[in-house]
Image (cartoon, rainbow, N blue to C red; front, side, top):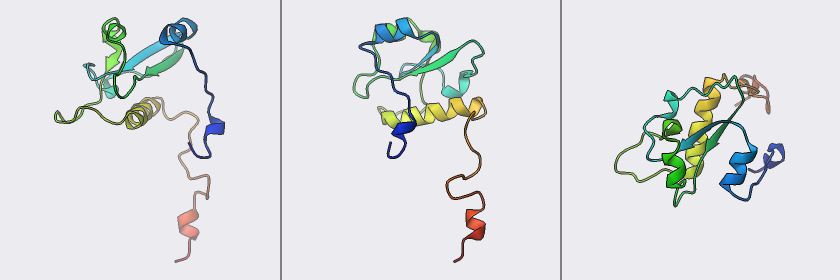
Length: 124
């Protein structure tokens, strides 16, 4: 998060129940037990916010939460020999897919830090 944390809005909640009681929208849960890939989910939400819920690397999300929400559980397809992927990598993959489906709102398609023509003007 070097040089980027100041751009983030972070809210903490004491527990999942408190979070769910205060936030309204569409919830999607990443779990090894999901039966859909992120590409199978429609991340367009005309009715409100979308929440991507990830558990701890060691234990994942509570089983009762997953069982009660099976229709919105998903997994990242991966080799059967691997137990799991690193959580930060999973978040990156899923967030990228959601933003891709939405057309990358608020994101730049051009290099803005050094300028879109940086390589063309770079002398070797």
